[in-house]
Image (cartoon, rainbow, N blue to C red; front, side):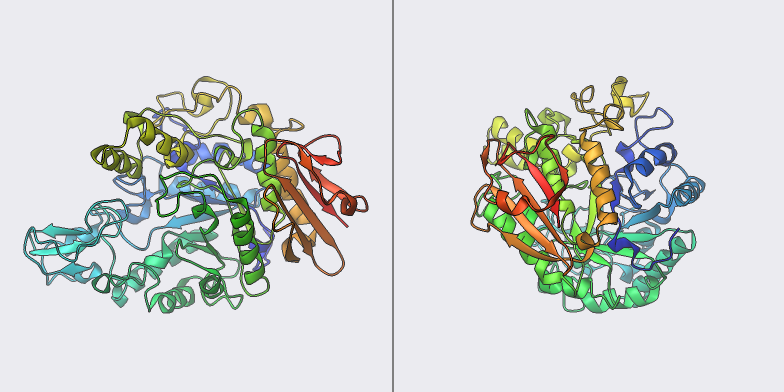
Length: 537
């Protein structure tokens, strides 16, 4: 495996949601041996690293984001020996393993918290955040991110503990240096086992000050990250990416400073928050405002060029399928899935592919009682109580539920899409006979082949990795076009975001350039529905 410490700048990272990727023992849940069995598929795709959503031991109240043991594998997924084998087998294929670390909170079943509850004098009590108040008192009125209150009474110590997300996820006290050191020791333990990097869940919450009502971007946040980087992230080639919903181009320059003082890169979500109604939340759906989308992507591309690094993504385990969201999951599913891929892969940064995205997998339509995701279930309950119709609630769930991304991977047209011989933990999308990996690998014109070619192009053309970004046709309501330039060469990407044919205002510019990839077979002077092209000069 190459020793280039900045390998991740030329890399493409593939996210696996383990419980939904491949089941090896017919229990209905994906597992690590199942992932190992599919490594050759990922090698064929051409990716460089796998980001695993949480596989550490957990009671699974929040699908693994409630960790009860950072240094063990949940039996649902296998054993530590299975993890060691995954790391080894992936390395043989020049693929690194990136672990998802939840450092903001633990499970309420973590041994640290079980000890913390015993008494105020317990050495682990200050690993968490506590507040003196009377039982039933409203405390500070904070609301947790999953919709309920954010302080929970513990009779044993006659105090409330703080939780940012769920009552099952007490927040760690990052102001306690013993907490920080314990986490750094754990990170180094995983690095010693051969892990190639870490994705840091809700990293912008680590500096919270709940008594000051500061949930994100606390005054000590970047001091904590720099300390963590110095203690655990300085190994050559280790890649780190932080999930930071609150980030902006200014803070991203701190997170991804090229001096390596913090992280390799950060996930920003400004583009993901555009398609909702003004003043509403994620469940209040609206069409994507294309001009705003172009402005956001342009600002991030230009702001971080030479002084930071972008993560390029549309989908993850928390987000709906992009072809259903910004493309066309019906007549133009293939064309729009490719268009969205070509648009993203021509930009500067590290692209992330979420499992099934390379196949153009779509959102699922479940019944209201079939949703598994805690956030969706809370939304359903809250909106029913507020008088919303079931039809309205279903539209929101169809559009935004996290279960859209968590349905089992569609491998073939075999029962349960080849995911399991048992009963899948979450329903398989009924379109799996048409949309599956077996039908697309080595199939000319498939969405899979488009992604594989885009990965190859990123390696072959340095302008994609290092060129400057300029937005074209910025006032156009239908077209997203841009150039990447590195002095010697120019890349031009043009994408039609509409389901209708429109004029191509750049057709004369393209005549003297070479087409590297397109989502239509034959060239045309117009832009056909969802047409996308990448040209080079």
